[in-house]
Amino acid sequence: MKFAAFTTVAASAGEATDAAGLLDNLRQQTILAEELGFEAIWLGEHHFGPYAAGDIPNPILLGADLAARTSRIRIGQMANIAPWWHPIRLAEDLAILDQLTGGRVDVGFGRGIWPYEGPQFHPNADPRKDRENRELFRETVEIVREIWTSEYFSHQGANYRFPAEDTVFSHPKYPPDPAWQDGERVTKLRVTPRPHQQPHPPMWMTVSSDSSVATAAELGLNACYWQPPARRIRQRMEIYARVRAEREGRPFALGEGQAVMRSTYVASSMEQARREAEAAIMSAFIFNDPFRGRQVFTDPGEVLDPDVQLDWDFLEPRTLLVGSPEHVVEKIQELQEVCNLGYLLVEFSHMGLPLAKSLRNLETFATEVMPRFSGDG
Image 1 (cartoon, rainbow, N blue to C red):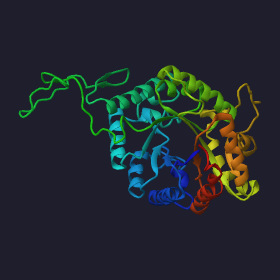
Image 2: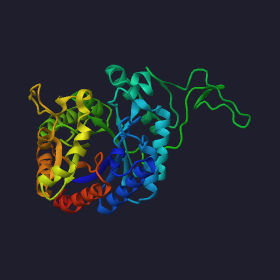
Image 3: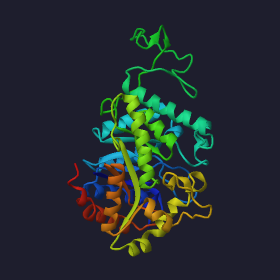
C-alpha cells in the first residue's frame, strides 16, 4: 500500500490569513510528509475563493517551489482542471516541472465542478454544459499527450487548431524544413521541453461517476476517487478495468492504476476526532449540493430519502477516515478487501484547522497507521 498526502492548499489556512502564511504552511507540511515517508504530495486547483477557499490557484508553480525544498517526495496535482488551461501551456509547464524535479511529477487532470470558475477560462469549460465540458476536457488531455510523445505535432478539433491558420516562419539561416513546413507555411509545431519521464509522467483523472470512470479508462488515465463508499468504488473499478482492458488488449486487475482519496483525521478516539475536526472536514462536503449531489455517496442500488443530510453521521461510515488509529486501519483494510486498493491519498489538512493539528494529524497517521501496511506486497 502506498500513501500520499493531499491538500487544497487553502485548507491549510488555520491561523494563516494571507498568501505568505498559506505558502509557509504548505512548505512545512510537505517537508514533514517527506520526512514521514509519504509517497507524494498532491495539490488541488481552485480559483477566485469568495469564501477564502482556493486562493493559491496554480499547483504546477507550487510544485516547483516544493520540489526545490525536498529530494524524494513526488509532486502531483489532483487536479489540474484541464478545461481551464490552454493545452500547449499546460504541456509546457508540466514538462518543465518534470525536468526541474528530475522526474518526480505525477500529473492529475479534472473537469472542474464550480460553475462560477469554469466559464471565466473558456466558454465550454462550464460544467453545466456537460457535453461541451467533456469534449473540451478530452481534447485538452489528448493534445497534452500528443505534444509529449511527438517531436512535431498538429491538431484540429472542436476547440483548438494547431498550428493556427496562416502560421508562417522564415529565417535566413534556416531553410524550410519539410518535417514541419510546407515552404514558409508551418504545418506542425515543435513544443519544448519534453518531460524528464518517458514517454511522459504518470497521468491521472479525478472521477466521480460511471461516465468519468469510463472516460479515464478510454484515455488511458489512472483514476482517483474521493466520495463514494467502498462498494460503489469497487463497482466503478470493475467498469474501469473492463474498459481499460479493451483499450490496451490485456487483462487489467481490479484496483490497478487507481487510487482513493479520503478526508482524514486521526486522534486518540472518535470522540476527540469529531470534537476537533468535524467543522473543518464538513466545510468541504457542504458544497456537494447542488454541484455533485448526494448520489456520489451511495452504494450500488441505494436510493436516499429526500431528507438525508450530508452530515458527519451520514458521511463518517461511508467516506471518512476519522477516529482512533485502530478504527482508521480497519477502514483502510475494508478498502483493500473490497476494492483491492493499493494507493491512498490522505487529505490531512482541513479548512480552519490550525497548522499544529494538521501536522499532528499527518504525523499520527504516518506513525500509527502506515506501519500496519508496511508488509503489503
